[in-house]
Length: 216
Image (cartoon, rainbow, N blue to C red; front, side, top):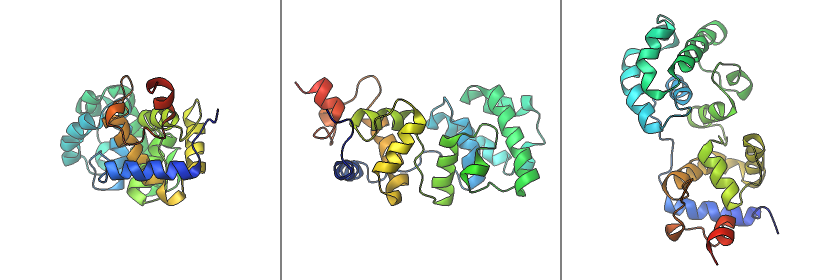
């Protein structure tokens, strides 16, 4: 039994998802690359909705790395407590801001190699920033993208890095960023973790999960 859809089938799947979610885009609120970086660090193990509630206040007060490093970890922690894991996130954000000032003139770097040197920034966060702040084609594999892409058959991997590689191999480069948003929208609204809504899904004709687990 084949493990992944063909590139032609994957292209059709993405076209159908784009028809279903024509407005798919980043759901974190930001106005520049620095705000996106902070918001994405805060989004670990936290919903975008909660992050947006927090940053709507946070970004009014703190606008630059220089603003953040005036605070202690405890002071910043109080401001981001609602996002969870606030002690670790506070420490990482402050250290990231120091490194941005020391190494990058206070600006967010625009390469994967530089971004992943920042505390709290892994490949997923770096790809989110590259894609949404710098318009660099990238596929950030979060929990939704990982689940959905392997469930459907766009990837066939047991870890995030290999899933990213599968998606990059199977999807045209100019569609990477769009595909990322489409898969997230699909995962949040239809292809949910515990109980996917297969009865309203536009891609059941192609989905491995549906054919194996649902359709009898």
